[in-house]
Amino acid sequence: MFCFRDTFGSVEIAFTDRHGGVSSPPFDTLNLGAAPGDSPEDVEHNYEILARELDTDPGTVARMHQMHDAEVAVLRQAPPPGSPPRVDALVTDVPGLVISARVADCVPVLLADPEAGVVGCAHAGRSGMAAGVVPNTVRGMRELGADRITAWVGPYVCGACYEVPEAMQADVVAAVPASRSMTSWGTPALDLGAGVESQLREAGCSVTGFGSWCTRETPDLYSHRRDGPMTGRSAGLVRIRR
Ligand SMILES: [Zn+2]
Image (cartoon, rainbow, N blue to C red; front, side):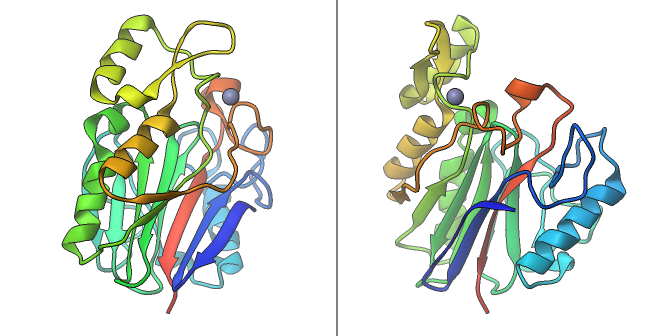
């Protein structure tokens, strides 16, 4: 169910893996994504299982319709099911509301200032990272009163696996220099997690390490690069405890 789960003061954070749900292959089993292919009923069932594990109601788990961009929504309540905000980051100061970012190789980022009672989450893929979704999330949290922000960078496709064309690497590195990488077979690559971490530190956040997994190299996690478009999505989740 979770590849990492922890509490940090009043804040609870978690990253899911692919186990414990009901989806059939190739989405087996805890697919939390909305991409076509899997049964929508199975995906909703997976959210019910997840909510039960978090000891909450599925209606309190806020999702995004992710755009690979840099917009942030401030949530005061869970959006109605079926019409999630078209953004790539959420921030909230509402206890009990779970906010989530879904990924299959992109970087899930969770952020919290437990003392101020403000949390955030971001889906940082190549485009979103370059467009600044992470600094925008930090700004959104500060507008809600966050000051000392800690961030967790969840599992993503590592810099030794994420091959990109040279021109694409040049474009992204121009925006985020720390994302430059090389594959283990010697071709141009991007390390999105390293890029995100540099943006977090520049924005004044502390970044907490908890080991690192590469989604492509870890069969317990979904990976678009490894499995192609017919794969599931895992999620990073954060909430302020009531
Ligand atoms: Zn890797």
